[in-house]
Length: 101
Image 1 (tube, helix red, strand yellow):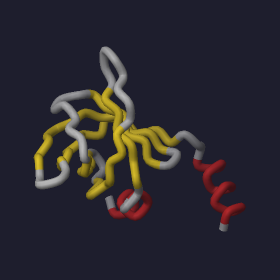
Image 2 (tube, rainbow, N blue to C red):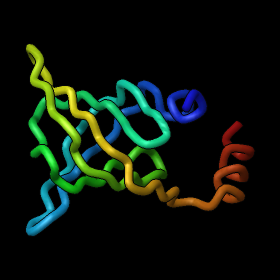
Image 3 (cartoon, one colour):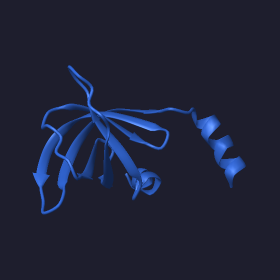
Image 4 (cartoon, rainbow, N blue to C red):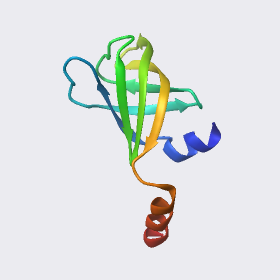
């Protein structure tokens, strides 16, 4: 999972609870990513077991909250990843990267 954390490490992401009523996105920071999970830090709590959507740059991750550990000034949230769907195709993102490089 080194490439994922290299791609998204230190990125600001947003997390949004899905369900009966979709909540507003919360800003979170990414602590760690593996192929089937993520660890995030959030100032606000997210319900355990809640289905969630995480947005990082052009990528949307669907998952659920596995566990939530309160710390002094943030919550550490462990997420199980169910699906990852890049908003752009690989070809488009490579072209975008080429024009911005």
